[in-house]
Image (cartoon, rainbow, N blue to C red; front, side, top):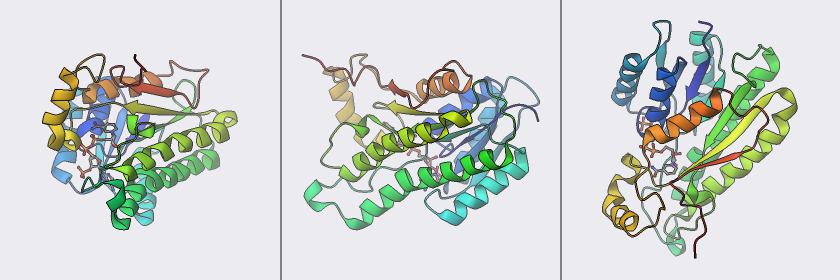
Length: 262
Ligand code: NAP
């Protein structure tokens, strides 16, 4: 049980599953959070067992809707009772708006739903885990100390007027990263933001043709879809302690999308 434990939200599918599988291949215990798709979460756990690099590693699934306070509290208690510790929290779970509506038609329901899951949930889940670290003063197992990673998006700085609430949630996460990084630097807790670009997951399956065309036209310098393992590798690079003198740093994992070109 003395291996580091990663708690990854939204790890049943997509980028979260990619993060879990890469962590498994590098020797970590993984706590796999999901909202409702238990079958997919169990499949992530099975794939993690296949990918594991040692027989001591454990993989367990934890249902919790991160937008609900009681679910967040219950999940933290359950993960701690199962693993005894959390070494890194990866705030990955997120949703796109159910309907892409122009800014003039954004509904309050969609605004609240997206902000609650994408911004409020990660903020308060991080607060819970951080308070556990500060209270228990467990010695960290990871080089460079405990870690929090927020999976935001290129939408943190790219205006899409047909999903403003999503962009607002991701821009907010960028500030959440800076706030926790500033607050926790002296406590030996590192906080990072990863900004994925256009990634091939369920979230983008409905707009695949549109993005295939944009990619072919050169929207992304590296001219390909991002894959879950691209994010998995970035997360593991951070968790493994390769950035000891950094905090609050933003990692663009977007094939060069963020580069200004002329
Ligand atoms: P996805 O394929 O739709 O998977 C979403 C994951 O989040 C699932 O595991 C889902 O669980 C979980 N989830 C959704 N709502 C939740 C809630 N309320 N509580 C707990 N878990 C919840 O999405 P993805 O593309 O992998 O996206 C992952 C993250 O990357 C999101 O934050 C997204 O905004 C961000 N991102 C994605 C892209 C992209 O192009 N795909 C680009 C930039 C950033 P269930 O399986 O139980 O539903």
